[in-house]
Image (spheres, rainbow, N blue to C red):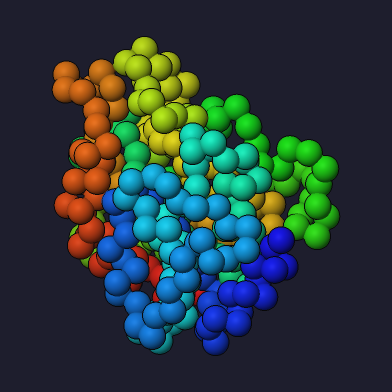
Length: 268
C-alpha cells in the first residue's frame, strides 16, 4: 500500500522535498506560508488514515518556503481514534518513501513541569512511551529498517542544537523537556500527572511517539516541538478542555510560524 501511495503522490506534484513537518492540534497555520502549494486530502491517498480529531485539517501539503521544498502533514492519526499503531505511522512511512529524510514534528501538550507556562514552546529531548503499544511490533520489514533500532538519539542532538540557536536569534524561550505519551482520549487525572512528574516527564500528550519510533526505524532525523497549550491536571484548579488547546494553538501560531520559517532551511 505504501508503494501505491508513493506513486499517487509523486503523480500529483513535481516537488521532491527532503524535509517534512507534522502539525499538531490547532497548529496548522504554518502550512499557509508555503508557496506553489499542492494540497492532497488524506482521503485521496491510498491507505492513508483520515484525521478525525478536531483541529487537524487532514491534508498533505507540498510547497516551497523561500525556495526550500517542504511537505506538511496538516493533521495526524492517533491511537485514541481507534487506529492500529502501524496505521498511525503510515504517513511518516509514506513520506520516507517519497524522499523525505528529516522530520520536524509539532504537538499540543500539557505542561507538567511547573516552570512551563501556557503558550510556551518546548523542545522535546526524549520521551516516555506509555501508550501500551509500539508501531514496530510484529514481523519486521527489513526494507524499512532493523528489528531493534537504537533510540538513544531519537530526537536528533544536532537538530536540537540548531533549534536552540534559532530560538536564541529570535529571542524565543525554548527549554528542553521529556514528553510522556498517554493513550487518551480522556485527559490525565491529577494522580497520573503526579506519577508522570515523579518518573521524569515534563510534558504529556497523546501523539508523536509512534511517529518518532517509526521515523528512527527508517533512519530519519527528527526534531519535535511541543506547544504547552494547557497546564496538566492538578497544576491549576480549572478543568481541561480541547477548546483551550485549540485556542492556545491560535495564540502561539505567529511565534511558531516565525520559528519554523527560520529553522527549516538550517536543517537541510
